[in-house]
Length: 122
Image 1 (cartoon, one colour):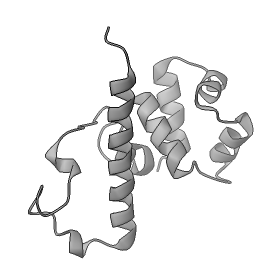
Image 2: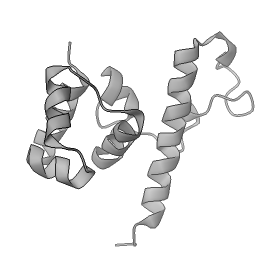
Image 3: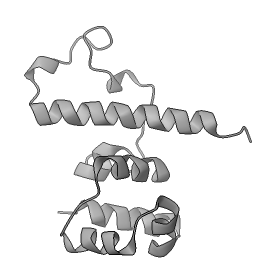
């Protein structure tokens, strides 16, 4: 089974940058990256959001390895779990850790939108 680090390493390779360049661009120490590789620690929530945004991948894939790394459907109804937006969700049946993950994922989506809005048009 792949770890979060394995998926990050795959993304670094696919982007064609060095691990050092990745660390510099995201403000990660090479020591932290080494700890992730050895399984001593994992990236925190905010850093995972930054990494997901940097590579344009979903947190679902980055954290859990679910779906494809290229799937990111911002603005999709799939992101919203309130009764008003998606009536078939059954939010009340989710475990607390699942609810927290959804909240973090929504924060990630909002972060990505803000970043896109800040970019000048090409």
